[in-house]
Amino acid sequence: MIYGNTTGIKTIKLQELENLIREYPRHSIIDRELLDRLAVFSHELSREICVFISRGGSLLSVGIGDSGTVGLQDINLRRSEDRLTGVRCFHTHPNGDSRLSEMDISALKKNRYDLLAAIGVKGGNVTGITVGYLKDIENIACIAYRSKEDLDDGQLFNKITEADNNLKNAELKFNKAEIENALLVVVTKKGGTGPEVLIAELQRLADTAGLKTVKTVSQTREGIDRAYCIGRGKLEEVRRYIQVLGVDIVIFDHELSGSQLNNLEETLGVKIIDRSMLILEIFAKHATSNEGKLQVELARKKYTLPKLLGQGKALSRIGGGAGTYTKGAGETKLETDRRQIKREIHELTERIRKLESERDLRRERRLLSKVKNVVIVGYTNAGKSTLMNLLTKSDVLVEDKLFATLDPVTRKIWVDIGKEYLLTDTVGFIDRLPHEFIDAFKSTLEEAKYADLLLHVADASGNDLNRQYGVVMDVLKSLGVNKPVVTVYNKIDLRDENAAPYPVLEDYAEISALLGTGIDGLRDMIASKLF
Image 1: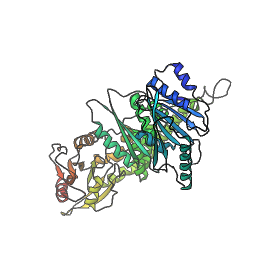
Image 2: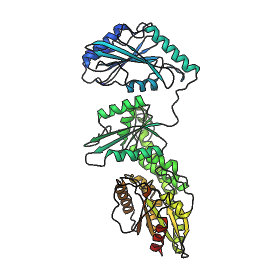
Image 3: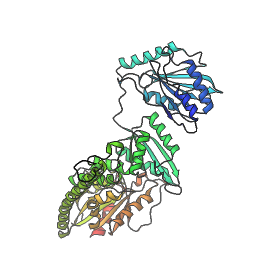
Image 4: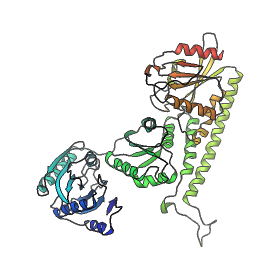
């Protein structure tokens, strides 16, 4: 089997490479004639060539890369997870350098090859060979040979046997870590928001979802690629990182269509999600109330529906057809799934409406009681829940993560003049939240419409203040909220001279909810606005 970048290679050359796939003497770590032919092919094509050889001497596949690197396959001929794979990998470096690269070493650790060798090639000749092998699950050792004649088969076979026995005797397992490794992809347009801001927020989302970010990739394009979101070259770069870094999931900052999701999963071979899907996962993790869980599920169904795609023959037409007694010519699995999701959306909507009616009754009783209501809004992770706890001496969950709290919480506050008011903490806002999410959480977000005063908590410590401030005001406007606002600039203890300037506002307070700085002044401001 030949894989990799075959573009521009003549058919006759591909056939010659295909002919390399056969049995070789099992007593050689690599057949010397094969070694010479790989050097010639690599020189003629100016590309890296890679071969995989089993312990029995069978050449399993040939890979073709570009002048810089070739993709290494995950081939495992051994079932036991505490053993090597039974496969050795040899690949050429047409620049003449026979040293193992960092990507080579990562691939050796991840794929557990018997050994991985880099062959330096210059002018069609072998200039040197460096062989790497695993000593244990974390450490590798390398042996450098100046020529193919110096290559010591017996020595290398002994190293493979020692490594295999060491791993088995130590009962070292190569199981995946419980935390999944994530690779983040951000696509920006020229003149738009810089990739640094988008990457930082996407990484915070990944952290909140319990993922470990092992790599970030960005690309600036005139427009989004309709098939893969990113360009083909960048796609190949992502594929290589997946291979050498042990990536379990790739997260795109840009919203992906159903066809893009399908194409990316088929090409990259790992789980693909976009930013909105990631937020949904976080919502599902943090929803605790019955209404919150229903809202998350409704948002998930609404977001999933337009992305459904049929995949191959498994979703081809079922039932119906000529000579069968059915209604019509049958329906696709895709159509069945869509109808099922639409039915579930309807049922979820009805259940949420019943809960909304209960919320409306509570709101009417509150209005009749003449008790004032203050609602906290703001960008996610701005410190809303910390402020809520400080003002009410309550115990709302506080974490340095996005969307740490999802369900609204209301507490009563007494002021010195013998008055009381209700303080409600709401779900945090975030940029580019899909309309399906706004619709699902509309009843919760609309708490702001019935407030007597809004506390807009903003993170004053970073350089993203103005963008986050604009996002919150845009969401409030879309909900039809037109209430008095006190802007609370939080985290002033972390603010430095390089932080973004405040938007010009009339009513604002500067505080540190964590340290309690400025809280007395904020309490006085709230009381003066309400009473």
